[in-house]
Amino acid sequence: MQSGRIKHWNKDKGYGFIDVDNQSEDVFFHISTVRLSQPIAEGQSVYFNSKRNEKNQLRATEVTSTNLSLQDSVENSNETSLPKHHSNNNNTSTQNTHNNRNTRQHNSNRNKKSPLSTLFSLIAIIAVAFYFFDDIKSTAFSDSAAPTAISQNSSGGSNSAPASSVTGDAQIDKTIMLIKQGGPFPYPNKDGTSFYNREGRLPAQSQGYYREYTVPTPGVSHHGARRIVTGGNPPTVYYLTVDHYDSFKKLDVK
Image (cartoon, rainbow, N blue to C red; front, side, top):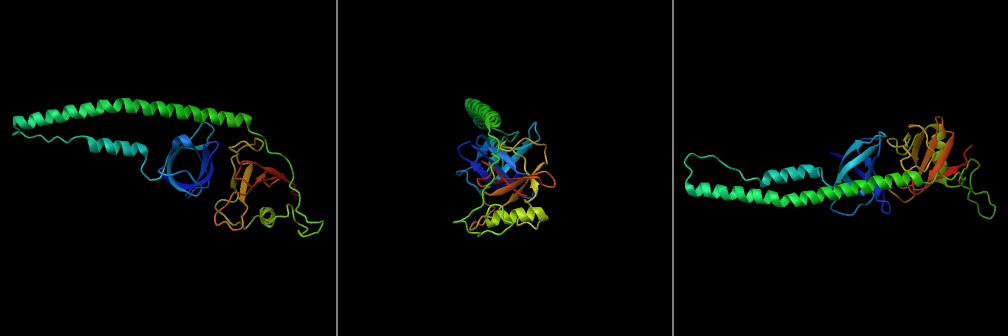
């Protein structure tokens, strides 16, 4: 299994993304695949299995709090529960009777598990159906990014922001400057990597068109929720999200 941390979690929609250890591409996950012992929270360490869908997007098939998958746990549990029989040419009739009783008990337990297995399969099918329905609905009805330029912050007409200011926010403007000059970036393993537009908030483009950069948040020790997403190489369009991809605003960058 792979390991990582919960990078983004949308509780209302039941999906999120995992920041994978030693990998630049994030992994999408849905609540139906989560098998955690505690509530889902951003920054939480997890283990997971994943595979690519028909759109070549990485999606988690199982998310757990340990590096042992649910399938491995069930197999190990079954192997442990199976009685061990040792052949012995000198078995007495009492031992044969005891073995027969164990065999009947094992068969009975196996039969009792069948309805539970059927119920679990039914729940899994319903969860997968709900997931695909929600995914299709989100894609069909997602709003495109509003091309509204963020106005500069001002107070009583005073020129408190520098002449090169785009938004008046020091961290945002510094990130734009670093993008223009090619770095150095505060998070070199993530800044400049491809943004896949999985939420469908930005206009559809070919893969590799969008790239994302972290905007540091004062007082926060981790990456935070603010990002700048650029389009084109070199960039010709800039978008800002302050709520971790839930919404975007187009920046007026000259």
